[in-house]
Length: 409
Ligand code: SAH
Ligand code: TYD
Ligand code: ZN
Image (cartoon, rainbow, N blue to C red; front, top):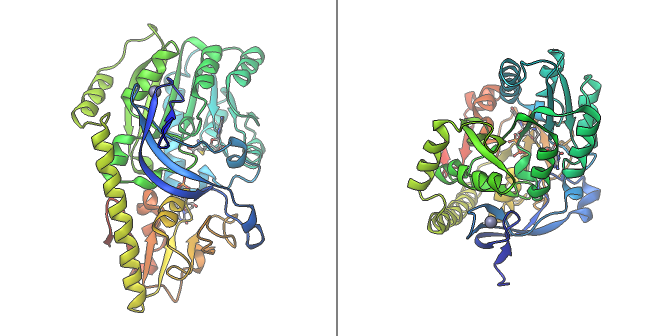
C-alpha cells in the first residue's frame, strides 16, 4: 500500500488521504502535571474511500485508550445540549416509543442526559456505555446501563436478556466506532422487525461549508454524509429512511435506518443526496480544497496570535474541548502564546491540554482582571458562553473565533 493510503473499514476499498495533521495526542486525555509521560500520540490523517466515499481516519487509536474509566466528557455540561437531548427523548417517546411496552437502547449514553427522560416516562431502556465513570453517574440517577462497548456480541447478549429494541439511538458515538460492520450486525441482532436505528453525528457537509476542521480528531473516526451512510447501511441489509439536519455542534445530521424494505424513505433523503451531489461532497477535489483552507486558517491563527503577543496583549483560550487538540497542536500554539485555557469542567481544571501542555484553569478564574482576548475553542457553545461570560466583554474583552476563519467579535 502507498504511504498515504489505507483500506476502507466499511468496504475494503482504497482510502486516499486528503489532509495530514501530523503527530497528535489523544484529544480527551488531559494529563495532570505528573502524567505528561503517559500521553499517547498517533498520526491524525483523513482520507476518502474511492469506492464508497466514506471519509475516515487513516490511523485508528485503540478504543481502550480513548474510552476509559476517567473519560472526561460529560454530555450534561451544556444547557443547550441538555435541552436538545430532552427534546430528542420526548419526540422518541411520542413516536417510535409509543407502542406497547417499548424498549429503547442507547449506544454511548454517557452520563444519561437522554435516557433520564426515557426513564422518567417509565419506558424500558438500556444504555451501553464503556466509560466507567460516566456510566456510574447515569446509574446513580436510576438509569439502566451496561458498562460495555456496543458491538455484535454485546448486542446479542442484550437481545437474549431483554428482547428486541424498538429504537436503537446514538448521538456523537457511531462516528467514534471504526468497527461499524460489527455495530451493524449487532443492530441486526437486536432491532425489532420494524424498529429504527437512529444516530446523529457531525456532518461532513457542514464541516466543509463552515470549515470546522477541528471536528477531526482521534475519536471522530468517520465524517458521515447521507451518501456514505446510505451505502454502508445497504451493505448490512438496512436502508437510510430519513435524515434531519441539526444545528448542534456546528451542524449534524440525524440518520434514521430501518431494515431493507420495512419503511419507505422520506423525500428528505433524496433531497440531501441531491444537495451533496451538487456540492461535490463525494469528490476528492472538494476535500483537497478544504485541506488548503485548513492550512490557511491555521497559519493565519498562529500569525495573529504572535502579533497580539508581540504587541503586549494578554490572550487566553476558552473551552478545553477535544476539538482544541487538533487546532492547537497543528498550529503549534504553546503556553508562551497562550498561558491558560479556561473551562467549566471540574475534572479538567488543574490539568494540562494534551500535547501543548497549556494549563487549564477554571472558567471562574477568567477574571477580573480579564484578559484582552480569549480564543473560543468551544465555538459550538458560543451563544451559551457569551451569556455566561458577559462581564468579560462588558469590560472590553474580545472573543477570537477561528472558524470559518479568523475574526474578532
Ligand atoms: N451521546 C453523548 C456522548 C457522546 S461522547 C452525547 O452526544 O453527548 C461518545 C460516547 O460514546 C462516550 O461516552 C464513549 O464512552 C462512548 N463510546 C465509545 N465507543 C463506544 C461503543 N463502541 N459503544 C458504546 N459507547 C461507546
Ligand atoms: P464540547 O465542545 O461540547 O465538546 P468536545 O470536547 O467534544 O469538542 O466541549 C465543551 C467544553 O467547553 C467542555 O469542556 C465544557 C466547556 N464549557 C465552558 O467552559 N463554559 C461553558 O459555558 C460551556 C457551555 C462549556
Ligand atoms: Zn469504502
